[in-house]
Image 1 (cartoon, rainbow, N blue to C red):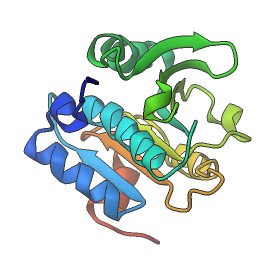
Image 2 (image 1 turned 45 degrees about the horizontal axis):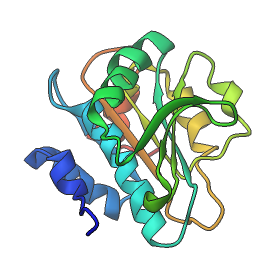
Image 3 (image 1 turned 180 degrees about the vertical axis):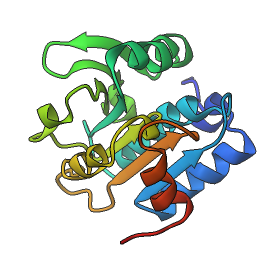
Image 4 (image 1 turned 180 degrees about the horizontal axis):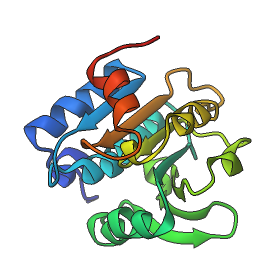
Length: 188
């Protein structure tokens, strides 16, 4: 008898996280904000995994998504160390792959999707990359130009409804543009 796994029971989203997960189904761009300890980094990790599994069910295998942080130390502290302990072994493996780089690769039965883990010390280095979805942790720590640069690599063959998911809190060098775009909804 094969074991049954529930992604929802694994994630156990809070009410706010659940609302944001539903928003991802409806919108291309989603911002999940709030004060410290709101589960923003956790939400980003699992939202990207959920998308990989969704696309695998639709027949898209080996899809690549990316989780960005402003630099490597924050990527390691906020994401990599958490993935190592949170993501169950039945889901996949955290590895430094020769082809994909630092990533979490889902097992074939979950579509073989790749959650690439990258830093934004120089966003231009990704100019030829392709990701079906991306999550940016603490987006307000980046200038607005990073947002536009990342949008240019948000593409994947066959997937028309790519996703950009950002998380952040008040403050930082990008506070004004993040507030203008996602809170005030001023889309000049």
